[in-house]
Length: 195
Image (cartoon, rainbow, N blue to C red; front, side, top):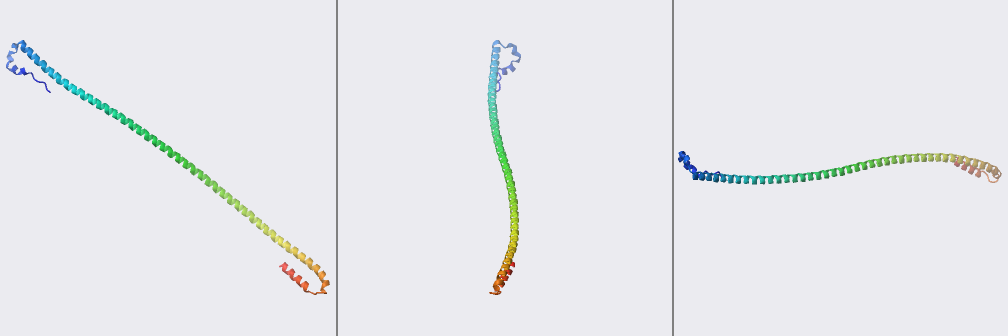
């Protein structure tokens, strides 16, 4: 509210020349009016100042509230970020453990596969050696059997020859009595054995 002008100023223009003639009462009235006007201005300024102080206080409270909200939000963001970072690191460590575990499993299975392959090759080599040994034994046994068959044939031939000689000696005495059929039968038997 703008300051009010004193009511006695209109008469001032009329009494320009009479200023010296103002009485003490007029001077006091004028001073009282001026004091009243100044008091009103002071009250108006005090109201404005109180409104400004109230607005400043409200603004400070709002700024402090904004600052508190900002700090709270910042802490919440920091907590969320820390929690997410912790979760990320936990998941990363878990995945790294899984990767290392799977790599170890792969390495172990490769080693087992290599050992199985080596064992298979060793078994095949041992089987091939055993087959070769058995084949050699079979060939040796066949050779022995053939040699034994030849020896047996020779022994049988010798035995038959000796028996034939004995029979001849004995049969010459019988030949006179029985004839040639026994000799023929021995001769046939000798031929069959030699074949």
